[in-house]
Image 1: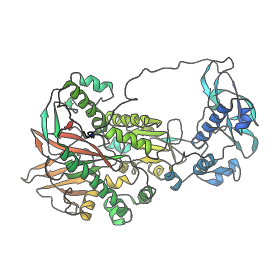
Image 2: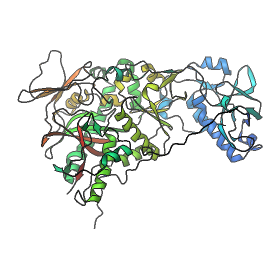
Image 3: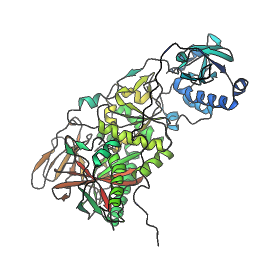
Image 4: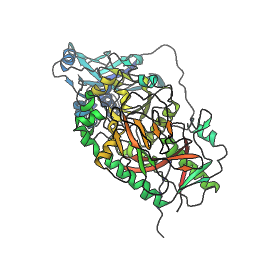
Length: 204
Length: 383
């Protein structure tokens, strides 16, 4: 007998829309500096930490690079801060990193921006010195060097973390990855407000 | 095609709420309505709905290339000149598209007629892909629909495959306006499917989208590399962040070229190219001072949920739906009245994922104009 081909989905499951317990992380108190380290390569890192973790940290830093690096619409302005030949586009960064973070469409589109090249990475740190879970772990992240201070590793938001390769003590809150630059909000949604008298939806 | 009365599942409302379907009732009136269902045979589904859906889709997508090369057509569709290159390059770069919905008039016989394409921000997705699917499984189990009944509804499977296979940014952000629970529900469903397909899906209220140095950014200031927005392109092009659309390296869903197809102006353009096609209704751009006679429907280029649509029946009765979309040009479309089942006029929303037909959702209204309050009814296929 011929198997009947169904015209409906084989399954229809939900994973997000079903309610699940919410875990709240409570936390307060004095912030403790944590030991981490700055590296340029996995090999340098492997002298201090587990090589697999080093690879993962570098991977995370590379993935984060185009998201957190300071952005410039103008290449010259970027080079003023980071040095001639030290700035790149996200597409170039993705090509260097061998990742496919930037879709082809984005590479081809006009109006790109420039950002400093990644000069190193900060090793991630989940535990404090007594071995317990940090409330605010240090995330592995990309590091940069400014044109006028070529030895100091800085985070994307310009916090100095280490003079050269090796161990560094940081307060986790000071190295939470955040992009530099002014953010404007509220630029979308005005038409919905203007036309909301009769409509409950802006789909259709 | 017929309508069959059916017992409701006991407790379906609380089940609906437990899976995030909070808009099952609309201003005290039912939106999800399972006091009945529609029954089709397989030939009706495959020959009259599935095949024409894919053919109409191909015809419409085939027009994009004509339009982006033709300034007159871009002007007829009221696309601001500033965005012509954006639209054209989104098409030339093959920016991926996720989904769309064709609204069809069909009564079980004869060719289905295309009313319009909802190709930018189509909703009723959760109702179609998930809730009516669960309804069928439940009712089969309870013996309330005939054994062997199927449904034209591979929507969730096809969306999951699309999220898994399209070249999409990851993480992928999803935005809808803050105060619409219906839009949020649709977006949550898409996020859920995207997550099942392995994507890191993240919600952001549309109003909370940020801009830093020309890049679209999330609440933490991270660049948004991929954004599904349940918000019309024609609104976005008029708003403060319109220039960010041009400067941000964001992959948009739906992509820019879909604004050509979600536009009601696609209907006269389809008619010009495929005049007399059995699934098309005669349509024209409205000329200044043109009279508006019996047997015609007038629709704005940009509107949704039936807003600002007016029509004159063959008997001369004028029916209109008010709305906030009177500020765009209009088209005229030959009236093809929706079929009446009992006291209700019935319309079929036929989904496309990628280039494949992916199922239907049925809407009922007491008037000839289907709108956002129109009831949603499930369906079955029975040979």
